[in-house]
Image (cartoon, rainbow, N blue to C red; front, side):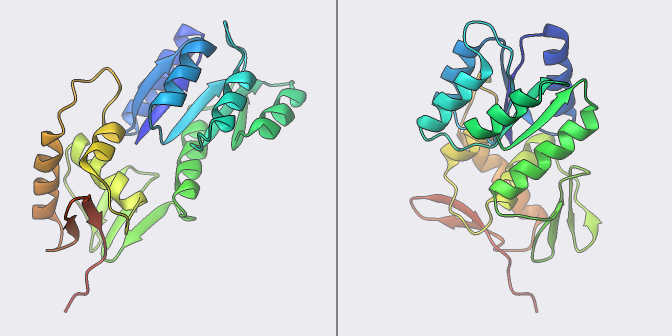
Length: 222
């Protein structure tokens, strides 16, 4: 899962990026509204964390421009604790949730997980696909109750497929959602991660959809 972090305070931006990385996300960062608008308008993010008090273009303007352009990724806005009017304005502009500063990082991560789950149509913190379960709180996957041993990239690929199970996902989509913008991307590596995952999952659970990509679906088991 790929997250855009928009925060102009360097220390908080670094803390957010570090916490998100530890939770298994990849992040791109912006410290002003102009760069944030460009990234959010041109890159496919699974969610964005958006501070409202930004230089060059304020966060509300960024959010309105994203929504006007049809950008639908979940957005969690960060506001000053007593600025209730900012919270209302943010939600009216298209924000999905808000968090007042200062905040506990655990709460931000929980809210972010919930936004991403809801965007994929999942209500529970545990997403199931047959015998396979993704625990979004613990950042782990289990098969028949046993925790799978996965590399960070294998987990990101599986997590994205789990959030979008039943859909045909192209290699390019997977690349865009498991790597940050400045990473040296190679779509061929996706095939490697898929091959490794297939060895750890029931046969046929990850299907190849000719001309489209891959699809995760539950298999009937004897």
